[in-house]
View 1 (tube, rainbow, N blue to C red):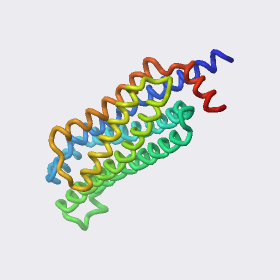
View 2 (cartoon, rainbow, N blue to C red):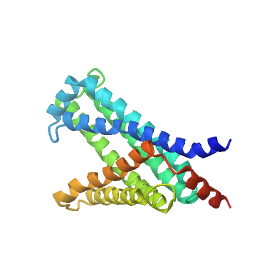
View 3 (cartoon, rainbow, N blue to C red):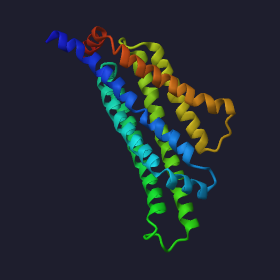
View 4 (tube, rainbow, N blue to C red):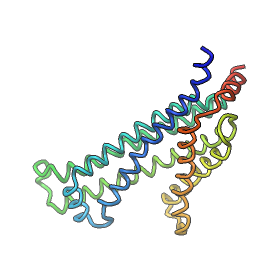
Length: 240
C-alpha cells in the first residue's frame, strides 16, 4: 500500500494537468467568437454565424467542455493543496466553481442568439434587423458574463498562487506567477467595469501574465506532478 499512497498525489497532479489541457477548449471558443463577431455590426455578425453555424456550435461545445474540465481541475487542486491550508483551499475551490458556473451559464446567451437568428417562425413579429440586433445584444451579454467570471477566476488564481508558494511540493515561482496572473485578471476586469482607461501595454500584458502562470502550472503538473514525499510530509504535519 505504501507505493500506492506515495504515487497518489503525483497521479492526481498529472490528472489535473490533463484536464487543465482540456480546458484549452475555451481558448478555441474565444478564437472562433473573435472571428465571427463584428463589433457594432449586427448584420455582419448574423451573416457570419448563419454561414458558419457548425463552427459556431463546435465552439460552444468546446467552451462547455473546457468549463467541465476546469471543474475537475478545481476539485483536484483542492485535494492537492488542502495540506497547505484547508480553509484557503476550500475558499479557492468555491471561487473557482462559481466562476465555472457563470461561464457555463454565459453559453446560454450564445444559444439564445442562435435561436433568435434561426427560429424565424417564433420571432415572425420582429423585423430581420430587430432579430439581428437582439442576437448581437445576447452575444455581448455573453462577453459581460464572461468578464464577471474572470473576476472569480482571478481571485481563484491569486489564492492558488499563495497556496503553491506556501507549499513544499511545488515550485514557488509558479505560485508567484499564478498570483500575479490572478491580480492582473482582477485588476483589469474591475478597471473595465469602472470604465477606467488602461494603457495599451497593460491591455496586452494582462493575458500574458495570466497565461504564463496557468501555462507553467499546467506543464509542471503534466510533466513533474508533485513531490510525493514532501506532499505526504506536509499532509502528515497538517493532520497532526
